[in-house]
Image (cartoon, rainbow, N blue to C red):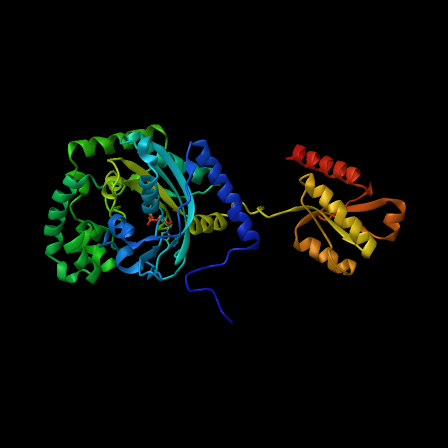
Length: 421
Ligand code: HAM
């Protein structure tokens, strides 16, 4: 038997229904904040990620799904969404005016699969182009926070930091290198490479053997130039005014090379549900104008796993309004026609579509999570009346066997239900 590829997963039935609910809530929030959807291809020229995510990042060094197509081009499955959005924005002159874009799209990273870490996963991201001031960072963080609030997630911590501009970082990197050099031989082999290529990333190492040396490392916030310092102070001030709780954590440096100034992560039980920050040089570095930008990316699988763990949306299933059972060819046709009439009126209806006993039809109706169940047989056809049963309360109702009466019945039940909520 051919099985799914390691690190990938199939999403179906109630889980797929939950994904749809969550995605539609999130999309409505994006539209409410005046963000518009962008869909970019699933693969791009490899060079795009070398020049954005960074040649020395773990993603590029170890995690990309890169292949040659039949013409010998080097292509890569998107490891993240931002670079592709920037490429598309430059290509289609989207950045002439300020742009607010969002996407929910697959991403691929060859990482060791474990809880919340997949090789194919979905990123839900927002990117705000064309505005440099701290209000836009605050708007982006407020948006991510609103998504978490509206979904009802609890115990999520927001950590923010500033990694300054190129100038601040140059000074900081040389100070950090002086600090690390003393124990360099005891750091992991990755950190030893980072020491030469991108020392800041040493702060993000997850290995305890490296972390223990870093508690007294120099603080990047002490190295910010006046402009970067003011930018960060104002962001903190705005977040306070927006009543968003946060913690400043100078070890948040992010794993992608394009960030400047503000960076942040929303964390649940030590796992980042969402990560983001400002990237003021990326559009220019990829061949566009000097356009500042800030954005975030949620990991959909991680978000949904917390939703399930916290029992949110536990009643979130596709519910049928009515299942129409039947006994023979004639009653099946009647059921089929009724179903389609009621579907055209936007009710969720299913019918028994082949020869089955009543027991198995009822079982099927329960599996489909229906509210009401009816059976059409000879008697019902003759008298033009049928019984509809509420499968929860077990109450039975007599209804005329025609579209209008059934429609009236379902509408009355719906409005009664709404009143009792
Ligand atoms: P990132 O932190 O690399 O940032 O990824 C964003 C989110 O994707 C993470 O917080 C995590 O929830 C999820 N994620 C990452 N890797 C995996 C994985 N292997 N399995 C499951 N989920 C994963 C970015 O990619 C940036 N593009 C975010 C951004 C947008 N920054 C500015 N704009």
